[in-house]
Image 1 (cartoon, rainbow, N blue to C red):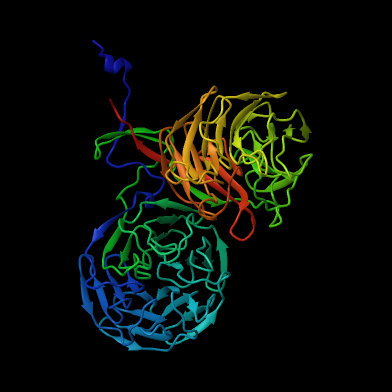
Image 2: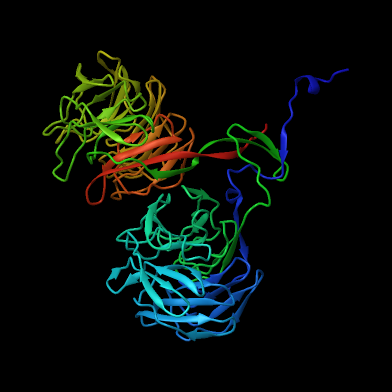
Length: 626
C-alpha cells in the first residue's frame, strides 16, 4: 500500500553546511594563538601558517615574532625600533620598510630578514609611515602613506638592492590596505584616509594605478590578503574604535563576509599575502584603540554548495531547515551614477533601476530648484521641470517613476500648498493641499494615491505638525493625525499601509529627546506607535514598505551621518552604513528595502550629486518550526 508520505511528500536536500555564492563566502574567523607581546601598527610577512610580525607600538618596537601555524616564537629583533611600518616577503626572506621611530620621526629605514637576523639595506627614497606594500624579498613595492604634514601617493619598487620611484597612486592617502598575493605587478590599494576615510580602490599592473570598484564601508587602518582578483580586507577604524568588518573582492565588486571576532585596526601588514586567493588569512595584533596581542585565522569550507534564490534544504550540522532568500540586514551600499545637479531637500520615487527626483536646494544659499531627473539604473537624465521651484516637499514615495505626484515644499517665505502630477513626461498643476507644509512625511503608490503626514506650515508657525491628508487624484482630504507632531521625517509604504520614521518634534522636552526615535504605522485609517528606531533623528532617507524598510543617513542631532537601520515589521536593526554621510531626507528611492537608493542630499561641506544604491544580499535563513 502506498503511504501518505510517498504520495504527498517531497524530497528535501540535506547538506552539511549552508549554501554560498563562492568558496570565500563560506569563510569564518577563529581565534588562534596570541602573540607573546602586543603589536599595534606592526609590519608582517608570510602566510597564514608561516608568518612574521615585527615592530609596532607601544612596547614592541624592535620585537620580531614568528608563527608556525599553532604558536608564536620570538626571533631576532629589528635593528631600528619603529611602528607604522610595512613588510613583505616570507619567514625566511622578508623586508621591513619605513615607519616611525619612538620619537615620532618619519623614517626611510629599510631592513632585510634572512630567516635568523635583520640587516640594514638601501633606504626608501621617501620617509613615510602608514603605507602598505606587496611583493617578495627581491621584488616588492610600497605605496601611499603619511609624510610630514601631508599624505603621499608615491609608489616605490624594491629590486632586492635599491628602491626606484614608479607610478603614483591616483588618490594620495595613508592607513590604506594592500592586497597582492606576494607579487608587485598585480596589487590592490584599498580604502585609507585622505581628510576622511575613503572607499577608493586602485589596481596596479606593474606600471600604473587604475581605479576599480569601491569597497562598501569607508574605514582606515584596514589590512588585506589574497590577490588582485580575489582579495580580502578586514578591520579598520573611523575615527578611533576598531571595527570587525570584512569584505571580499572577486575581481569586479566587493561583498561583505563574516566579521572578525575582535574589532581592531592596523593589524600586522601583509601577513598571508602569499596566497593566490582570499581563502586563508591571519589578523595578528592591532589597535582597539590600545595595542593587542590577539590573533585570528581566516579559513573557508573544504567544499562549496552553490547558493540559489528560493532554495530549501536541511543543514544536518546545524540540525535546522534553511531557506535562501533576499536579506535586508545583509545588504550593502555601492556607488551609482551621479546626479547632474547636486541638491538637498529633493523628493524621490520609483525604483533603483527606474527612479525620479525633483526639486531641492542647489547650494549654500538655499536656492530652490524646479529641476527633475530620471534614473535608468546607470545614469541620470534631466527631464521637464516642475512648474514651480521648491524644496523640502513630498512625493508618492512608492509610486512608479512615470506616475507620481509632488506636493508642498518651501519656496520662501512661506510653506507651499502646491500639488503637481507627473505623467512620465510633464508636470501639471492640480488642486492644492488643505494645509501648505514642508518637511512632511510622504508615501503613496501613484500620481492619484498619496499622503502627507506632519511637517511644518511655515516660518514662525507652530513648528511641528501632526496634520495628515490624502490625495485621490483630484483633491486632498484630511484624515487622522499622527500621534506625535514632527517634521523632516521620512515615510515608506502605500496609501493603506505605511510607516512614518523618526523626525524633529522641535520640543526639547519631548520624551526621548527632540529628535525622536518614534515610529508610527498607518493602516489606512489611523496611526499607531510601533517599535522605535535605535537612534533617533531627523533628515533620514527611506525605502521599502510598512513591514520591511530601511532608514538611512540623517542630519540631526548629529550633523550628517552614515547610519542605516532595517525594519522587519516589528523592530529596527542597525546594518551596514552608507559610504557618504548626508542629509538624505526624502531623497530615498525604492519600493523595496532590498533595492533602495539615496540620490544627492546635503553633505558636510556642500550639496551632493553622489548616488548610493543599497542592495539586499541573497542569504540563508533558519526556518522556525512550531
